[in-house]
Image (cartoon, rainbow, N blue to C red; front, side):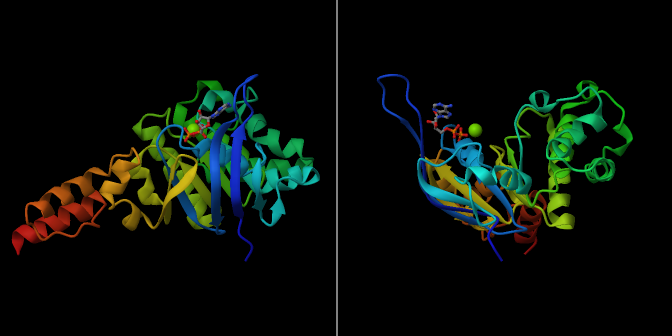
Amino acid sequence: MTDIIRTENLSYAYPPDEGKEPIPALAGVDLTIEPGSFVVVLGHNGSGKSTLAKHMNAVLLPTGGRVLVDGIDTAEEESLFEIRRRVGMVFQNPDNQIVANVVEEDVAFGPENIGVPTEEIRRRVDESLKAVGMEDFLLHAPHMLSGGQKQRIAIAGVIAMAPQCIVLDESTAMLDPSGRQEVLRTVSWLNRERGITIVLITHHMNEAAYANRVIVMDHGRVAMDGPPREVLTRSEDLRRLGLTPPPTVELLDALREAGWDVPLDAIEPEECAAAISQYLGA
Ligand code: ADP
Ligand code: MG
């Protein structure tokens, strides 16, 4: 199967202010993202996450190397629509993504722009709103909704384009815990039930538990890449890269240092509690 996203020695430098040097943001990124996977991208501020995301649907074009989306080189100008149709993007601020005064019109905006026939649009809008659990809000005003609901509308707008992959760049950062949960549950469901590839950029370490792969960026490079259990338990490496390990891992680390025989990879709170009570009961 063709990788949905493939970067080959991808480098990018932002154009400089007059008389200054270009600002390097990505420095030789080689990544392949398989269809159907759920990838979480972590990394401290300025590590290159957003720049990488913007290469995944040709918002930015490489200054070195190349990016293939479902086999299509993003540098081919004539393929821009094909690329945008395959990979949809959800951003951080839900208010900046609303384009209409009525939910159904907002969701219809994308497919209308690419010339989807009216009847098909109707079907896609209904289906997309259902997929994010917002079918009862068809005629509501988007700006009256909560942050989590707005982001789900933004996701519905992306789903209405029938993408193979959705990239979410810190889309939960401005939400309260329940809004964050709404969005995470929605994208997990889309991944599991619809097979849509998810690339979730976040600074919430615990969101990595939803993924089947975690990538940590640092200075425009991939610093760590593996299953959550492997990456999240490498506390020292995480700290070196400016990240705080999950609290469960820190606790298990401390207990092991104190001589307790508990597993380090009980990263979910329930597993962690079970491991500790098993140790105490043994
Ligand atoms: P992250 O999303 O991980 O915080 P970014 O991809 O936004 O990181 O930034 C990577 C590097 O590129 C940083 O050094 C940042 O200052 C720089 N950068 C990001 N956006 C721009 C821009 N529009 N113009 C110039 N430099 C930028
Ligand atoms: Mg960013």
